[in-house]
Structures are given as C-alpha cells and as structure tokens.
Image (cartoon, rainbow, N blue to C red; front, top):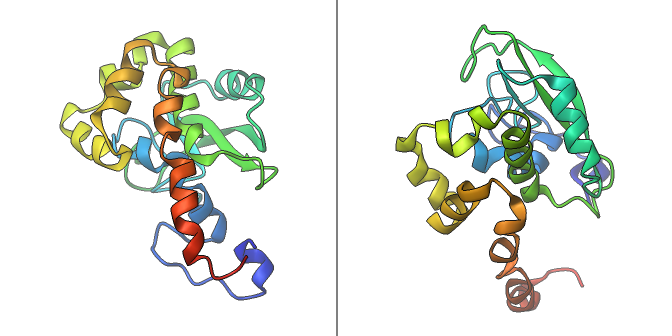
Length: 183
C-alpha cells in the first residue's frame, strides 16, 4: 500500500521529505546525492525527485534515459533554480523522475543509469572523475562497499555492478519473511 492509499495526512518526516513521493524517490537519488556533484532536488521544491546541473541539457538527458525503457519510470526535462544547497541561485537543467508503475520501478537503479547516461552525453563530466573525492567515503558507506564506486567508475555502466548490487536481495527477502506483519 502506498501512503496516499492510507487516507492519512502526510506529516513530513524531514524538511527534505515534504510529501510521500519524496520518501519513495529517496532511494532513487540519495546515494548519488552524497557526492554533492549534481542537484537531487534538495534546496528546491521537489527533493529527491530530480537530478540536475548547470551543464546538463534537460531534453538530451531525458531522451537518453527514456530510451533505456526503465520499467515503471519516465523522465521529464526540468529547468529550475535551487533556493539553497547544490546550485543555489543558478539556472539548472536535468530530469524529473516520475513513477508510472510502482510495482515495476527499480528505484535504486535510477541514479546509476543517470550517471551512466551523463558519461555517455558528457564524458568530460563523468561523475566519479569530478565529484569531490572527500565525499567518496560516504558514497561507499551508503552503497555498502567501495566496490560499487570503483567498478562503476571504470566504464560508467550499471551493467558492471548490477549483479553485485542485487546479490543480497533474495537472501534478505527469505530471511525477512518471518518478520512480515502481513502475508
């Protein structure tokens, strides 16, 4: 059940989680956001729902990402001027992430596909070549390993880390079943 289906009023759990969709999209952009290299919407009206920068061309990036046909996801070009945080007061472009089918969307993959397509469109801006290296430690911690960063950075392709990214998913589901409140 999605929060909107509960009929309850949303109470922001954080200033950066003002609406239910912000909480849902947190895993889609939050790891990338640890690098501070691009805006993920924190400092604007739709935190965790976008990825933007002053060097991204919105229509190009949206086109490339939509051609990947990621299940349950659609990317729309977005133009914004962040109020604070990354890009404060600057004209930014990028993509807003729209969940079209909650059952099919694989949220944590989105940020890696965005990084992949940034490297395709703007090879001189590949994320790990330009992000602040002092922030790599936090990225590694929230990714669970430096393997994700180091392996992805070689070719900037999600396919290179996909098996590693999902290797614990099914074992976790099996272990967690005994704790489910609803079957």
